[in-house]
Length: 260
Length: 299
Ligand SMILES: Nc1ncnc2c1ncn2[C@@H]1O[C@H](COP(=O)(O)OP(=O)(O)OP(=O)(O)O)[C@@H](O)[C@H]1O
Ligand SMILES: [Mg+2]
Image (cartoon, rainbow over all chains, first blue to last red; front, side, top):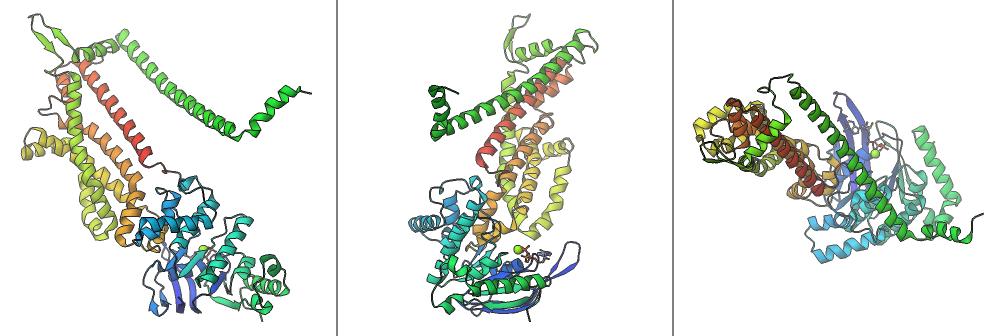
């Protein structure tokens, strides 16, 4: 599934009546199967953009479309991994992970199997029957990721999903996510504060400017193509291309405008 | 230097994870128990001090016994209300007003059970609808607040005219007292459900109905239970008003009648029994709450 933004903009009205211009006119096309990473300073409208794509927010200007139909609300085909884990404390970890399948009427046996596979994937085997509030923050985040993966959405929208994780777990989940996106041709919209993570994961990196948010840099990441193979993490990170791109993106975030 | 035996003793616990976690659990239980004992001790000390002051005041007759009977007199009244005794005429009388005190208490509890029970059956439903349907809330909220602010004593007379002097009017009064707090707590609960919780469910494919059933309902449970506790407390304060007329058997009725007949000791005994029953019931509900909502305050 692809998605398209057509001159999408967002103005919030705060409780005190002020108008906040969060997102300037933004046009964007993300083809099916692309892994696009979004970076930008805090408050520049990244989450706003994600909410519009998820269908939680109707943009105040322009149109957001999935394939060719207008986004009018949330759908299971657009899974969302939130900044906070949002697990339901009245359900066990397993029940949380199986919830989407339950909503969609999938039978118990299949739910169990799919849920278990996703729990194994994020390294939560053995914690299935725990209370969610008895997990660590990073484990909760992994459970949330498993919950979204279990639903097998075509588009995965992720808001700084790995921010709360230790380096080792983050790296493992990054690899898993890459694999999922490649094997199953998922379209992924991935917000992060880590430039390194963006370049490492993305087929494409978007840099947004401070308020009102605009896409000031839209860079394809073609290092693997240039080398003609998928480079393992360590090797990739030390290539001159990686370093150059990372610095270019970091500079753009710093100055807020596209480099000359 | 320590000898080899001592060395071994200090090493073994660290290389024995099961023993260690068992010990942690045991320590935890012990400290919880100690804490409970301390808390209970504090409450008990306050009780003893209050009883002591009461006893001193009556012992030195600082207040006439008609106004404030001694603890012993109240205890006697309590015993007398729960036993049979021979009158001078040779006739045997049991309890007070032809019923043992526990029968009075049970009669009141039954009324509360009916009134509050209906409120528990309807309140969350109404609150749930009002909390999720904006226009319904706009339409009904003023009347709910109106009802909430009415003093039960004010309209018991009206209820008696409408529903007779028997139990029906009492049920209605207790229901009307218990209903608003439950509805209001439920509305607040529904309103307080975090937006992201609902968004997450919607983007997993939940229909509106499923969001209500699987997300909003359990998320609201803590507030509903809180509302029920407030409502039950309210019902106890209302039970005397409900039993002012034809309230025998009934612990509230007995408190009122004995006061009118200047049996002050019995009145105080009734008040204490009402208070203790209310506290016990609330403790039960609180416990039920922690069983039903173990996540409360932790997630
Ligand atoms: N509901 C709202 N009402 C008013 N203003 C809002 C609202 N939500 C967001 N904003 C404003 O819109 C701007 C963009 O917010 P957004 O959450 O999209 O930023 P972000 O890029 O995700 O930031 P961060 O990296 O810190 O998460 C911010 O300046 C914020 O103050
Ligand atoms: Mg954000």
